[in-house]
Length: 267
Image (tube, rainbow, N blue to C red; front, side, top):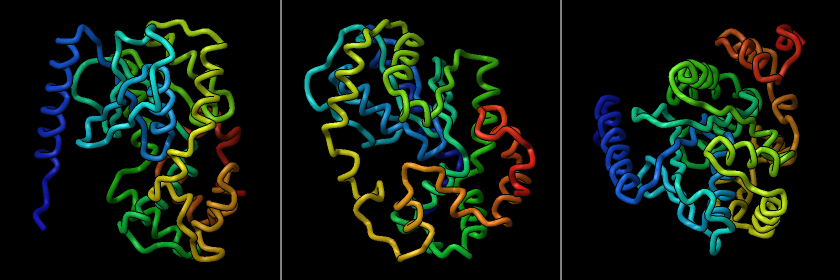
C-alpha cells in the first residue's frame, strides 16, 4: 500500500476547497465550515441542515455527503453552504466549531476507529494504550480545540457544544442559523428536530456503533450501554485521566465548562 504524506494530503484538501469555493461563487453562495474533532456531532448538525435546506450537505472529503430527507423547510439559508472538515480549512470563511467533552469524544473516536479496523484495543486495561495510539495517529483532542481558539482570533468562529446540541437542539440550531445570517422561528426548528427524530438514518449506519455488539464489559460495551451519559467516568482509569491531563486537556475542559476543578483527574 502506498502511503500519502501529509503535504500531499494538505495540497489535495486545498484543491478540493478551491473547487468548492468556485462552485459556490458561481451559484451566488458563500461558504462556511463545520469543523470539529471527530465524533463531536458534525453528522448530527449536517442532518439538521439537510432538513432545513433540503439539499446535500457536503464535505472536504470525497464522497462524504449527508443527503436530504425531503424538501427543505426554509429558503433563509439558501445563501450559504456549510462544509464539513475535521482539519483547519486553508480557505477563508467563518467556522462553526463543535466542541464535545474531550474524554467522551476520544472514547467515541476510539470506538469508530476500532469498527473500521484501525486498532484492536477494546479491553478496559488497554484504554491508556488505546488513547495514546489514537493521539499518535490522529492528534490529541486538546490540540484540535486549541487550534480553533487560535483561529477565532483571525476569523469569525461560533463555538457550539455538542452537549447543548443534544439537550437543546432548537436553541443551538437558532444560534448557528443566526451566525450564518438567518433568523429561524421556534416552530420551524421544532419541526426540523421532530423530523430527524423520526428518522433512523444515523443509527442504521454500522460505523456509528449502534448495530455492533461489543464484548461484554469491554470499553465499547460500557460506552454503548451508557451512550447518553458521561461514559468516560465509567471507563477512564487513573492512568488515563493523568495522561489526558498531562497532554493539556484540563485547561480546555475548564474553558468550556466540562469541569469546575483543575484537580478532576486526581479523583
